[in-house]
Image (cartoon, rainbow, N blue to C red):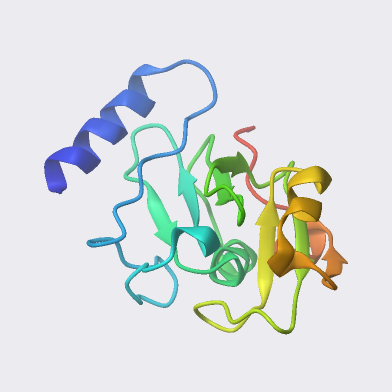
Length: 148
C-alpha cells in the first residue's frame, strides 16, 4: 500500500495541472479526520496535493470538518467527493450536496454529494433531501480548489 501512495504522490508532483483524485482502497484506508476504516466509497472524500500523500475521509461531513478546522492545507490542494450514486470522484467545489436525514452515513452527517442535480435526482436515496451549499459543508471559504 505504501508503494501505491508513493506512486500517487509522485504522479501528482510531476503534473503541472490540477491534481487528480487518487484511487480509494476501502480495505486499507482510514479516515483522515475520525480514523474509521473507509468501508463505503459512496460517502467518501479526499484531499490531494502535489508532493503529498492523498488524505481520504469516510464521510463528506468528516472532510468538511477537516477543511473547516485545518489551519493550513498543502499548497494547490484539491478536495474531491464521491458521487453517491455512481461512486465517481468529482471536485468538491462543483458538487451538489444534500442532507438526507433518513440516510445513515458513516459518521452521521447525513450528507450526500453528487456530480450535478441530474445525478442527485436519479439517486432514490437522495429523495427528500435538503439542499446544502459547499459553504454549508466546508465553511465560508469552501473546499480547497488547487489555487494559491
